[in-house]
Image (cartoon, rainbow, N blue to C red; front, top):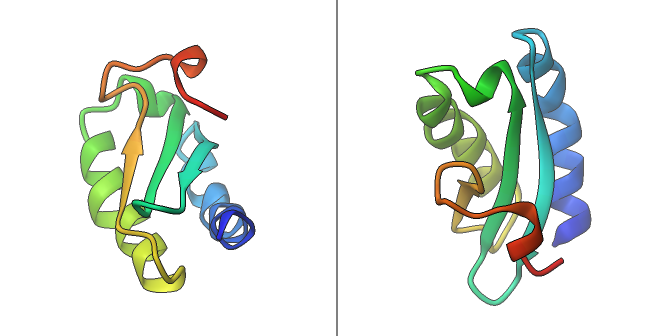
Length: 86
């Protein structure tokens, strides 16, 4: 599943980078289907980043990768990269 998630991120990354942001894959929990990412750059302070995450990234990810149930941003759930099991 992780490889499929990485492929989808590679497809959507240019659109995010076009707006001075970026996305990094942090974790894929195959048991729950939760994909954890870190939005970077302009995405961190953008008021529309939650909408981009849920209506854009999550929608695309769940439709293209079997088993993915949701996509969460470590910045929005109060986690740090060091607290996520890699």
